[in-house]
Image (tube, rainbow, N blue to C red; front, side):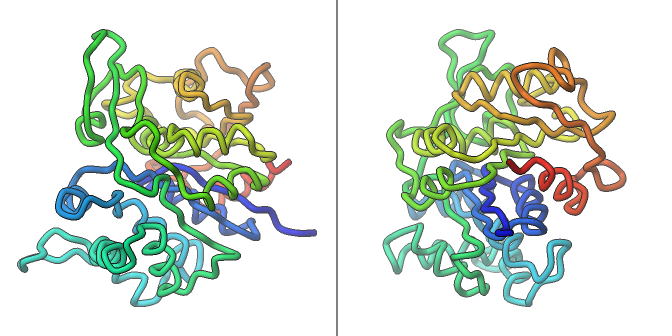
Length: 303
């Protein structure tokens, strides 16, 4: 039996955790990574070089290229996360600088990511990391209780609450053709975990990505966060997360949530509309997803 093609969509450490889980059961893994981050090393490079955010892409390259799903990598892979201190490039991660340099040389951020993937030993027919956009984008949000108020930038949005909708600017920002093809071809699409607006939806609201998810033959699974966030989704239950996804044109088939974690709200196991799976997917002490546990649940949810 052929192993499935699974596409993981999102950003940050949450997407890296999903990649490590998916690698355990998928024959082919593709990551579609948010590119709107404007903080830290990534923000400095964006300002200086006008390129899509490299930081989350770096995290995903490290997760994809690890020698085993639980960690343990080559020195080169580990070095991508090395952050300089006390030098002219203080605060920058080596992987960010590598991606920025490759983008400058090739003139193409997707080509830069592919070249970095080759350097860390990834076979593009088995594992590929792709940015959600081929060009720099800015994340914008509107706030539910303040009509007309708009927040600009991922960092600012991550510190806010009461978010109604987010979008990327320019509105016609394109995703790589390979990302759309992977989504349509996928046997399973996994969204999350991670910050709902600034990681998951920051990738999924790109028009090409959203349409690719809608046109996919695969089952769409949303992995909910283990616990409530203090800012952008403060007070959300699982139903609140699903409602936010639907407001943005994303309709998950299944939601995976930690047993005893966030309350379900209006959703219930066995209910209509979206399947809810409550399972133990946390690594002690319950602040991060366990790769092996999450892999076992996701593998059972394949079509």
